[in-house]
Amino acid sequence: MTRRQLTDEQWKFIAPYLPIGAFGPYPERLRERFEGMIWRFRTGAQWREMPERFGAWPTVYRRFRGWRDAGVLTALLEGPIARAARQNKTDVSPVSVDSTTARAHHDAAGTRIDAEVLDAIDRAAAEQERARQKGAARTNRPGRTILNETSDGACGDGASSA
Image (tube, rainbow, N blue to C red; front, side):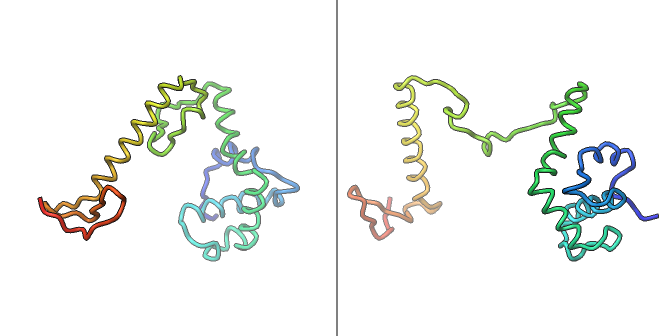
Protein backbone atom coordinates (compact mmCIF):
# COMPACT_ATOMS: atom_id res chain seq x y z
CA MET A 1 0.00 0.00 0.00
CA THR A 2 1.40 3.41 -0.94
CA ARG A 3 1.49 6.33 1.40
CA ARG A 4 -1.47 8.65 0.83
CA GLN A 5 -1.51 12.43 0.83
CA LEU A 6 -5.08 12.48 2.16
CA THR A 7 -6.80 10.36 4.77
CA ASP A 8 -9.91 8.44 3.73
CA GLU A 9 -12.04 10.88 5.74
CA GLN A 10 -10.51 13.88 3.95
CA TRP A 11 -11.01 12.16 0.59
CA LYS A 12 -14.69 11.50 1.33
CA PHE A 13 -15.10 15.19 2.08
CA ILE A 14 -13.31 16.39 -1.09
CA ALA A 15 -14.38 13.80 -3.69
CA PRO A 16 -17.91 15.17 -4.33
CA TYR A 17 -16.39 18.47 -5.50
CA LEU A 18 -14.16 16.87 -8.15
CA PRO A 19 -15.62 16.18 -11.59
CA ILE A 20 -15.91 12.84 -13.27
CA GLY A 21 -16.60 12.99 -16.98
CA ALA A 22 -15.79 15.96 -19.17
CA PHE A 23 -13.05 17.33 -16.88
CA GLY A 24 -12.19 14.28 -14.82
CA PRO A 25 -10.29 11.03 -15.13
CA TYR A 26 -11.71 7.58 -14.65
CA PRO A 27 -13.08 7.36 -11.08
CA GLU A 28 -10.50 4.80 -9.91
CA ARG A 29 -7.64 7.16 -10.93
CA LEU A 30 -9.20 10.37 -9.64
CA ARG A 31 -7.66 10.14 -6.18
CA GLU A 32 -4.18 9.34 -7.52
CA ARG A 33 -4.21 12.34 -9.88
CA PHE A 34 -5.53 14.70 -7.24
CA GLU A 35 -2.95 13.52 -4.70
CA GLY A 36 -0.29 14.08 -7.37
CA MET A 37 -1.37 17.71 -7.57
CA ILE A 38 -1.23 17.98 -3.78
CA TRP A 39 2.25 16.42 -3.77
CA ARG A 40 3.49 18.92 -6.36
CA PHE A 41 2.29 21.97 -4.42
CA ARG A 42 3.35 20.62 -1.02
CA THR A 43 6.89 19.96 -2.17
CA GLY A 44 7.32 22.85 -4.59
CA ALA A 45 9.03 20.41 -6.96
CA GLN A 46 8.69 20.49 -10.71
CA TRP A 47 5.97 18.46 -12.38
CA ARG A 48 8.63 16.24 -13.99
CA GLU A 49 9.85 15.16 -10.54
CA MET A 50 6.48 13.69 -9.54
CA PRO A 51 6.69 10.07 -8.33
CA GLU A 52 5.18 7.43 -10.61
CA ARG A 53 2.64 6.37 -7.95
CA PHE A 54 0.52 9.40 -8.96
CA GLY A 55 0.60 8.48 -12.64
CA ALA A 56 2.50 10.07 -15.48
CA TRP A 57 3.36 13.68 -14.70
CA PRO A 58 2.06 15.04 -18.05
CA THR A 59 -1.32 13.45 -17.32
CA VAL A 60 -1.51 14.99 -13.84
CA TYR A 61 -0.36 18.37 -15.18
CA ARG A 62 -2.96 18.35 -18.00
CA ARG A 63 -5.64 17.42 -15.46
CA PHE A 64 -4.53 20.29 -13.20
CA ARG A 65 -4.62 22.78 -16.10
CA GLY A 66 -8.03 21.57 -17.24
CA TRP A 67 -9.47 21.82 -13.73
CA ARG A 68 -7.88 25.21 -13.16
CA ASP A 69 -9.26 26.61 -16.41
CA ALA A 70 -12.72 25.13 -15.80
CA GLY A 71 -12.94 26.59 -12.28
CA VAL A 72 -12.95 23.19 -10.56
CA LEU A 73 -10.22 24.16 -8.10
CA THR A 74 -12.04 27.36 -7.17
CA ALA A 75 -15.23 25.39 -6.59
CA LEU A 76 -13.22 22.96 -4.47
CA LEU A 77 -12.13 25.83 -2.25
CA GLU A 78 -15.55 27.47 -2.03
CA GLY A 79 -17.77 24.37 -1.88
CA PRO A 80 -16.65 22.93 1.46
CA ILE A 81 -16.66 26.40 3.03
CA ALA A 82 -20.25 26.98 1.93
CA ARG A 83 -21.23 23.49 3.11
CA ALA A 84 -19.66 24.10 6.53
CA ALA A 85 -21.39 27.50 6.76
CA ARG A 86 -24.78 25.89 6.05
CA GLN A 87 -24.11 23.47 8.91
CA ASN A 88 -22.97 26.31 11.23
CA LYS A 89 -19.53 24.72 11.47
CA THR A 90 -17.48 27.70 10.33
CA ASP A 91 -15.16 29.59 12.60
CA VAL A 92 -13.73 32.72 11.03
CA SER A 93 -12.07 33.93 14.23
CA PRO A 94 -8.58 32.88 13.05
CA VAL A 95 -9.06 34.74 9.75
CA SER A 96 -6.91 37.85 9.47
CA VAL A 97 -6.72 40.39 6.70
CA ASP A 98 -3.67 42.63 6.55
CA SER A 99 -5.06 46.07 5.78
CA THR A 100 -1.77 47.24 4.28
CA THR A 101 -2.16 44.79 1.39
CA ALA A 102 -5.96 44.66 1.11
CA ARG A 103 -6.64 48.36 1.17
CA ALA A 104 -9.38 49.61 -1.10
CA HIS A 105 -10.34 53.12 -2.12
CA HIS A 106 -13.34 54.50 -0.20
CA ASP A 107 -15.39 54.46 -3.40
CA ALA A 108 -14.91 50.68 -3.61
CA ALA A 109 -16.83 50.23 -0.37
CA GLY A 110 -19.65 52.55 -1.40
CA THR A 111 -18.76 55.20 1.20
CA ARG A 112 -20.16 58.64 0.43
CA ILE A 113 -17.81 61.48 1.36
CA ASP A 114 -18.58 65.16 1.14
CA ALA A 115 -16.51 66.99 -1.52
CA GLU A 116 -14.88 69.25 1.11
CA VAL A 117 -13.80 66.27 3.18
CA LEU A 118 -12.49 64.50 0.08
CA ASP A 119 -10.45 67.59 -0.89
CA ALA A 120 -9.02 67.78 2.64
CA ILE A 121 -8.05 64.12 2.49
CA ASP A 122 -6.37 64.61 -0.89
CA ARG A 123 -4.44 67.66 0.39
CA ALA A 124 -3.32 65.76 3.49
CA ALA A 125 -2.19 62.78 1.38
CA ALA A 126 -0.24 65.07 -0.97
CA GLU A 127 1.41 66.82 2.00
CA GLN A 128 2.31 63.48 3.54
CA GLU A 129 3.84 62.31 0.24
CA ARG A 130 5.92 65.52 -0.04
CA ALA A 131 7.18 64.98 3.51
CA ARG A 132 8.03 61.36 2.72
CA GLN A 133 9.95 62.35 -0.41
CA LYS A 134 11.80 65.08 1.47
CA GLY A 135 12.83 62.56 4.13
CA ALA A 136 13.93 60.06 1.46
CA ALA A 137 16.29 62.67 -0.02
CA ARG A 138 18.37 62.73 3.14
CA THR A 139 20.98 60.24 4.22
CA ASN A 140 21.92 59.19 7.70
CA ARG A 141 25.12 61.28 7.46
CA PRO A 142 24.62 64.75 8.95
CA GLY A 143 25.23 67.62 6.55
CA ARG A 144 24.94 65.51 3.35
CA THR A 145 22.00 64.90 1.04
CA ILE A 146 21.63 62.53 -1.88
CA LEU A 147 19.39 64.90 -3.79
CA ASN A 148 19.65 68.66 -3.47
CA GLU A 149 16.61 69.98 -5.27
CA THR A 150 16.30 73.70 -5.91
CA SER A 151 13.04 75.62 -5.99
CA ASP A 152 12.91 75.43 -9.80
CA GLY A 153 13.16 71.63 -9.78
CA ALA A 154 16.83 71.44 -10.88
CA CYS A 155 19.16 69.14 -8.97
CA GLY A 156 22.32 70.44 -7.33
CA ASP A 157 25.58 68.61 -6.76
CA GLY A 158 24.33 66.77 -3.69
CA ALA A 159 26.88 68.28 -1.31
CA SER A 160 25.55 70.64 1.30
CA SER A 161 26.66 71.37 4.80
CA ALA A 162 24.63 72.10 7.84
